[in-house]
Structures are given as C-alpha cells and as structure tokens.
Length: 309
Image (cartoon, rainbow, N blue to C red; front, side, top):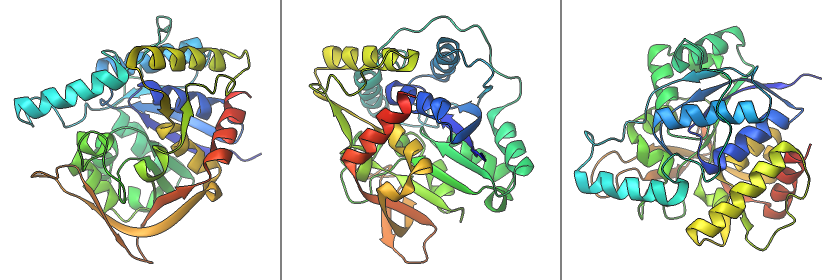
C-alpha cells in the first residue's frame, strides 16, 4: 500500500497531541518527521512536548526537527497586546502547552533545522509530499523564501488556520495560528501552492463534549493519554467542549470528501485593529480551498476510529 508522505509542522499543545497520535496511528500516512514551531508554548516547550509524546507512544524512530519561534513576541507587539496573547495561550494550553504530563524524552531533536528538512524532503519526494502545518506558519514561510521551487515540489499544504466566514478566537478578527505570524501566513497563502485551509469555519464546530465519556473507550496508549488530557482540560478550564482543530486538519489529508471546500483568494491583514484577520474572496480559480462545512458526526467518528487503531 502506498502511504501518503506528510510532514507535520506542529507546536504541540493540547489538540496537537491528538493530531500527532492520529498521524502516527493511521495506516494511510507515512510521517516523514515532525517539524516544530513556537505557538501554543515556547519553542523549548513545544519541542520537549513532541519528544516526550514520541517516547510515550514508543515511536522514537520518528525524527523531530526544531524550527523557529513564531514571529509574535514581546519585540513585535505592544506590551498590552503581548500580555493579552499570553493570557489566551495559557488559558487554553497552560504554561507548558499541555494539560497532561508525559515521560521525560528518551530522544533528542535532529541537528538540522526544520526549514532545511522541509526543503530536502520536498526535493526528494517531488509531487508526493503533503505539508500539514497545525501551528503558526513561520517554518513554512521561511522554507518558501529560501527555496521558491517548493511551490512546484510540494503536492499540497493542508493547514489549520484562519477564519474566513466566522469570528476569530484570539481576537474578534483573528484565529490563533494566523495571529502568531500573519506575515508568514500571508506569504504561504499567496504562494500559489495548492492549499487546503481548515480554519475555524469547520474546526471550532467539530468538538468533543464533556458528557461524551465514551468517545474514546479503548485501552491503547494513545486513547489513555487523550482521555486524561480531555478530563484535565474540562476540569481546569471549566469548558464543556474541546474543539478538534488539528485532528480535523490531519483528517483533511485522509478524507477530504468529508469537508465542503470552496476556492478562495485569501490574504491576511498584518497591521491595525484587524491584525491577523484572514480575508477571503471567492474565486473559482483560487489556489486556496477553504473548508466552509463539515460532516461533524462522521468526522468525529473517523477521528475516533483512527485513534483507536
């Protein structure tokens, strides 16, 4: 069986954990590596979270490549904006990015930079590689800047980010991943690469409810850690649902037919009061396929099925 080759570009926080486990467990995916970006937590924490998860899942053969911290930092925003951003991040993901403890990692990251790995894999597997960014798009934009031929080499980019027809989640206008590095997002979305954009239009409405205690009932390592994570999130945040942002993005690679796609031209506002807002204009020839609807019941069932493999 020919597996789909992917690179998962991730900033391991809570929903990233589910997405990584999904990608590792799917018999249809060949995970070439995890590339790490800052976002849900610092780059040091997100790297450690990835290495610890691979150790826990007994998948230490999967290489981890450290990339860049997202562009949003104390130097790029006002003190008030940065404190608001940090408060949002900590509320959702905690100080370290995860609401669950994992073992100390038994492996370390690879020596080459994530951007170099992305370029190398894309060149080696021309037309076959799908990049799946579920965090800020910093690494992907840097790779495109360094090697513009990625536009021709990469099969597609299936990304989690943006909010075209719905409000944002970190501000009224902006979705978290785009808000972290809007200039990177703008560069990627305007690159001409075939892009499938899984934004809040479809990811926020697809969620696990607190009362759905039987959503993952098995005893595999992945299911156990996810149940622990969900229980802790519900208890510590007071939330009654957990949106499946990043798992939906992995699902878009496996079962794109579960999502209603429309072609758009998409740009990002990089300054002013609407900082981080994704602006979509319908265009039948647009290179960005935006998910505008999803079969929520079937999507959740498929995610649970993969996680229980």
